[in-house]
Length: 198
Image (cartoon, rainbow, N blue to C red; front, side):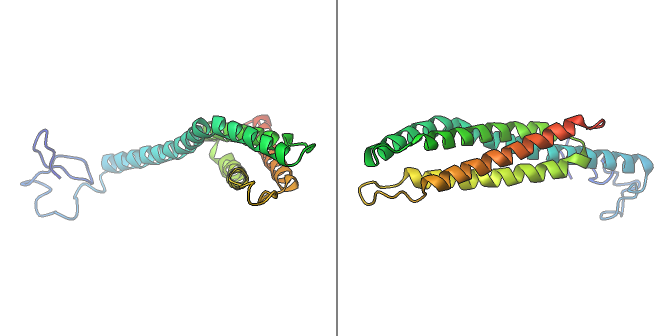
């Protein structure tokens, strides 16, 4: 491989400048230094750094995804929930429409908590990480399902039918499930905090 800054050729395996007349000569596909202890140590260090970088990127992307959704959706969700509440009351006088506001609050709380769960998970020891990630993924799936359910509800055309696509009971149940999943993740965090090596 050539570098433009020095126009020197170097080896991918050992990282040294390619020696055309010395040990690299006639060894185009098999570096003679590949079993050298310093080269092996260097390769281990590169692999470790690469692994750490992938781990960081994974947790940062999870954090950034939830932050981006929160930035775009929080105000929008609140406004749409208020609008839906007023339409619900207009079409069904006397109905308790506060459930839609509570549902949006549960969604916002879950997104906030999930965002910071990625920061927390990054610093967890490897022994605890897999189980914690699994709990977070379960909660994320409920957030996606619930968000889609609310989206369907907001899109409801009151001129065509007075029955929204999802009933009050369905939204309340999904909201309760989301709160339960969130409490489960929080309990997992508390449990990990109590462990001596956690």
